[in-house]
Image (tube, rainbow, N blue to C red):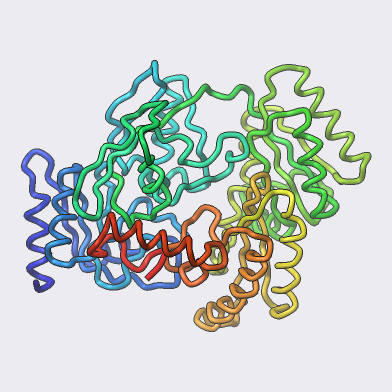
Length: 467
């Protein structure tokens, strides 16, 4: 089929009278929907389809199978591994118009959502019903639930509440063959063979498309309080973590470097937490449910100062101050964005973080002393974000080429530490060449076999995870 015939057929498929979808071909739309937050691959989609129903998605997948048309899913387009990039004339299936909360069950504390529901939309709905959806990250205002699940997004609360997959009671998916599967049917207990939910969570749309998800909710946390500490050394992050976890249930434990905070402060809107400068900072969050908890927190802070682990610190006295302190961590990405950072999202077991980070930092600094390195991340779950900023005088192409060499060194260290080359953003295209640093040849062979079962014609997000 010609491009014109494919586009005409797509329009017919989503022209359902009661729920008409859209097909977009304007160059601005192709550029907008054909990419994510990565800046490496220029978008070149054939067309953008915005379905309204699961049935329309199913019709699209069947059409794609019959005519060998490649499909790329698009959610909030906040990913950092090019998993939602359409760079080779694919048809983008965007879920922006499948954004309804369909059902709420107060007894089960579950809410059924379409895939295009925004993370913040789900969080707000939970709050309005005196409940809580704990999966949270800086892109919550634009990321979509289907995309979150397709990459098993984690974020800032994993230390207490886990990853996205931990909150999925049920899924409705359209497989690469065009079958609609209703997985787990929201059951808390269901030991009837393989749990197919978890194949689609983290699959980046390569097995099929998530169209609905039933998400679990929990009780609202009480009096979330934030403590920001200036640390004398990177190893002190583990000292502080161990000390506080003996007495408190932390809801978050983040860290960032002095250089990272410098960019946030220069960006404006946020003030330094205290006058003392430190090479590293830790942000702790916990529920201050009683005076005893606050007394314990202050005693732990004093202990950390006496031990020499902490140089200075501040604790929030109100919800507003807690939110302001969080800005020190959450505004890092936007503050360094103008410098075209090359990002790596890596992880190891928590106890090995300090040595792991120091080795990587040394390797990059030795070979490229003119590269500015920005470290931050979810150190409480072992997830680090390595950001290398492009020197202003260096061409983008030259910078990315040098970063490819950096990747080899970084991932060799990741492999030695038995870590992950992608902690929470998926593999997509940017990590595809490095999958073997985390997965064995046997594992990758099984992944390919699973892909063949669900998507035999290779039309679902082809070229992502592996070729």
